[in-house]
Length: 87
Image (cartoon, rainbow, N blue to C red; front, side):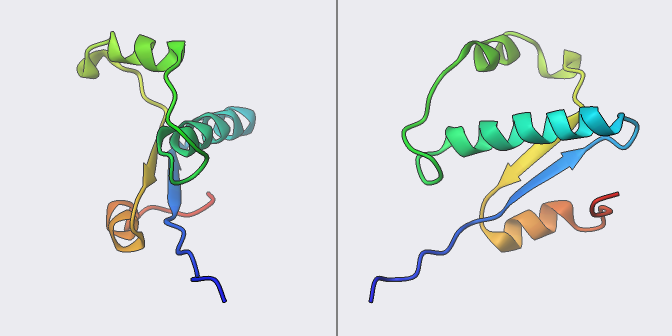
């Protein structure tokens, strides 16, 4: 029997003042970004124009509408504790 692989969770946090279609778009964008950021999920990491464009902007100047978190379950749970699910 092959060893069981534990999959770390991905949590996506999205602003509540967005339209439903925007929430879905942000969720898809962030999830795919996390999936391709580590070779544990999809394969070798990649670099694209989006990542370069974000790096070019100072952190304080970013207009964030969402955040994705990937890691061990206890750490993801700690980061998202107190947030409303699927609201």
